[in-house]
Length: 280
Image (cartoon, rainbow, N blue to C red):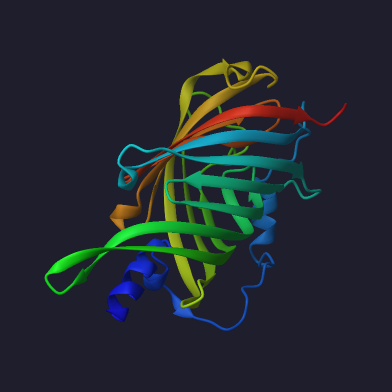
């Protein structure tokens, strides 16, 4: 009986009990490798942008097939700024509400123009209320439980291969590819379950820019200039992890912002609620 309960709780905790990777007892260092740094800054945005986007608020609708048509919602507030070396710094505060559970998280990251992650750290707390059925003899008895999971993730890019020098200045009809390797550390504490694992992630993306530039005001009335629609298909060694991410590259601000993502099991769609630019 106890083994069955633990197995079900592991499933409820986002698959934590089966988290891949190797056990570690130290935190992943969030320092860009010296050999990689010059390459990253060369690909980063070097030219001044017309309008510095400094704040985004968006609501993401999450349609997971496991929820049988019941939608979940993720509200995000993001602070954006370019570092002196041209890399983009982003802080995201998220509040998620879904069937049977909720979570809050804070994510800080450094990227190339919002499309290539370089460094990242996220921490969150989720609360789940789950009703399931546990086998007792020949019958199934309903079992209700609540669980809390504290989680933390760190990400550090270790290798990058991009086949264009115009990553941060895409043009209509352009196609490009991104290949990267990164170290990812995932920590979880769910009371009866604790984990601290690190894995090496290899992923590649093939991206295509739409044929025409579109008014950024189509995304939100306060957005400035034009945007290019960019669709990227991401793959790794595991075919089940394939995902398609739709971006808008904001020409006036020189950054990619995500409009949505589709995986085998889930579809996310974003809607912008508020935008703010740095005063000129």
